[in-house]
Length: 188
Image 1 (cartoon, rainbow, N blue to C red):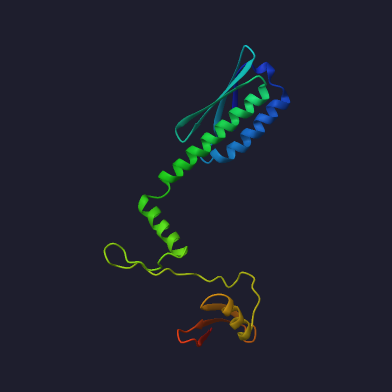
Image 2: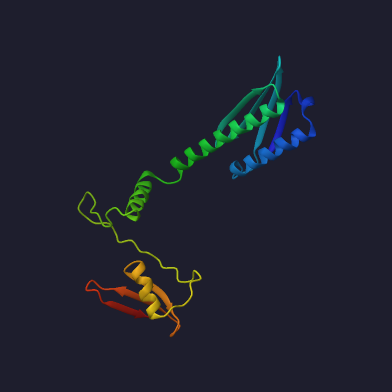
């Protein structure tokens, strides 16, 4: 991020400039997705207060952060914190309105409700039911191969099916509990 100073620049020590550039470098990670940004920093002193104003253009908005304190370092830190909160707020607002339309957001909310345990296949308002959701099983997540007996023990602790790599046959197997209490074993 390019920083342009104006005002009383004699009072900026090299240590203070390093601190400001480090804080703005952190902030630039949030805002520099579409090219180089410029921040204009104005400093003036009224009576015993150091006034700092930072102006930054972000998503076609001019963000202005102001702070005043008797200590220049504190005034700069407060102005940068104010600017950071404004950037985060504008960025979140932009994401909510521009990323996905409302119908996509509502379907995401519906899927979230289904995952949390609300009715899995609730009919929609027009009487049709939703498409069934496909759950992908990750069999390459570093789990060790197991025998059929170990899979039965694992299945008693968890759900109605277990996908595992059979250690005897070195193949992918699925063990499914049937409604009558018996089990089906599917081997690849």
